Image 1 (tube, rainbow, N blue to C red):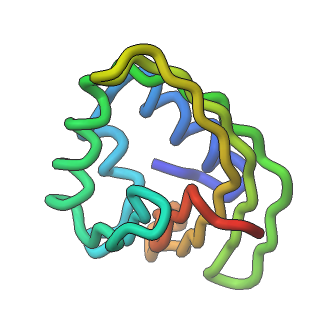
Image 2 (cartoon, rainbow, N blue to C red):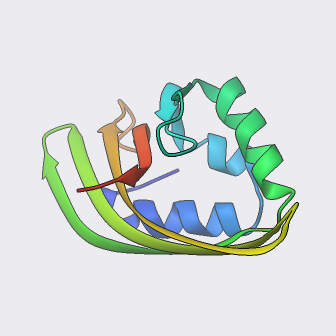
Length: 123
């Protein structure tokens, strides 16, 4: 659960680094959208995101996610972040970096969930 947009990156990073697929999915709306790769087809819904995450977790990734800015209004919030990642892919160790833009929506219970997650954004 995300209690506030200010906690979103820290919560997401902890679950990702723990390779906690169920915990990570719990941070997304049921029809949440994730851009899995630059220029790739967006993944929509828990089933698609689960499949991507489980494949990705096989590479033992570690991410360092840093919040750069948050814009919040009523029941919507945008987080802008920078990230670096390391892991072990099929071709050996890898390092990646990028900028993420995430749209969070406030839920009826006051928690926040990810509606759109673009870790490859340019903004």
